[in-house]
Image (tube, rainbow, N blue to C red; front, top):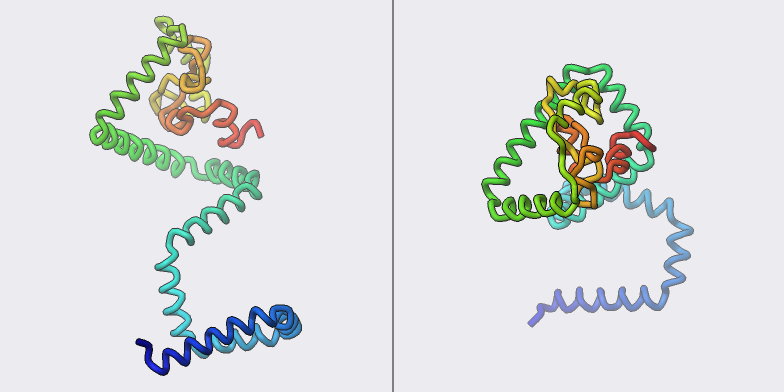
Length: 220
């Protein structure tokens, strides 16, 4: 059973709700005519009740953490799409001015990716077995095969450089990459392979080559 005070609050809330429904246009007109005065009043209230506002904001953020993250992701995506060329140009300029930091960053990425892959393989042996079987099946179904010495031939054709970032493969190591990935219908043949550094190959994954190069700022 509610206390008299709770009953009073409930009656007031019901009256306000009913009033807002019956006077919707009148309230809208009032808000438009007094927008600045209302904003100033609200601003003054927030200043006078800063601690209360801060606590309420903290509670709301805790209750809506995922919603806030998604909002930030959407804003970031929208900003990136709007400023894509500017971002790519800035990244290229930074890499040009900071070759040593770029190299350290690439090495760190490779190290982290290898550690992640090792942990994933150890923790997901069944998934890795299925993945291996599926990849072998795709190679067989493609009807092709790689010739002996293809890696040496590619190193010569690519002048020892990664086909994507142009880093020297002698320093980075190399992966044999299917230009059109097997997962989207590419052939397991000499004409469909290239050498990429480990970082570029792991970044490319099963992307179409056009999509991958566009993500790197090329073929725009």
